[in-house]
Length: 204
Image 1 (cartoon, helix red, strand yellow):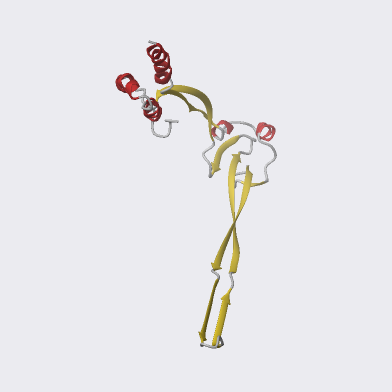
Image 2 (cartoon, one colour):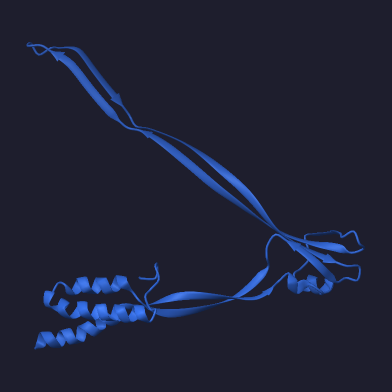
């Protein structure tokens, strides 16, 4: 009777633990930062973005504000070659205990290595075209300038990994499998029907 009560208490706890919460980040497009510059005055641009790295003529009486950001990355590589150690000995021994033609050799461990590095530079740029009236009328950039907002949600899903784990755990007491296995099958079927099965990579 006591064992039955323990099973009735533990089994629901085990089955509920088959469900886990995993984090999902949702991204929503808000606006394009570069498109938002269109129609703004040069003074507004200077207040919001800052002073450009340089400026040049647009060929039509206006100017081009040039913003640049350069990222320099250096990667180092090292390689080593190691030669093993060994030793050998040989001799011709005669009845009087003397050794003739004794040879002995020993080879130590040698490690050689060399290092190389590679440096790369990448520049992101934004060119804002300002007309002679001081209003932005066009832009050029090698980045898209899209701005997204993010929201973090936690979704509950059925983990096949944990369901199998708990079934194996209860196998320590074989009679418990008569209860856990059918319940796990029922839970799995229900979760699959409701689309609650965890996606690959979300089972832990």
